[in-house]
Length: 136
Image 1 (cartoon, one colour):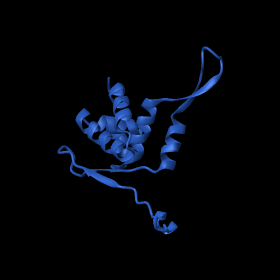
Image 2 (cartoon, helix red, strand yellow):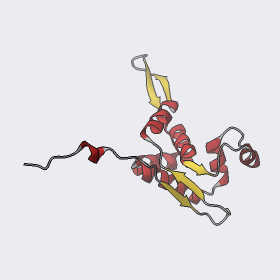
Image 3 (cartoon, one colour):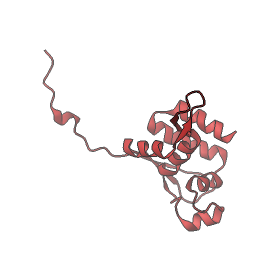
């Protein structure tokens, strides 16, 4: 007979993991955090548009993968504050957090941040291919 399991074994305070990524061009490190399931669901909803199916004529939900990746990266970067007006102004990306991140970073640096974010989520293969498609 199996040992009795306590429900307390499954009640843990979840701490979102954070990682620092240091790039030689910047004085301070970038800090990337793991997002929650609720945040991820909200990002997916924000990136979902209703598209008319040409065969059925019905509107169907479709996730814009490029937009989802942009939202995911912007939400995951804690430092620097991508919403900061001075930072956005410096890179000419007012109101565009993901655009600010892309403008700041070299392709290899953006790849490192993307890899960290996708490692947290456990979706490395699918998001990496989406990111490559966005870059091309």
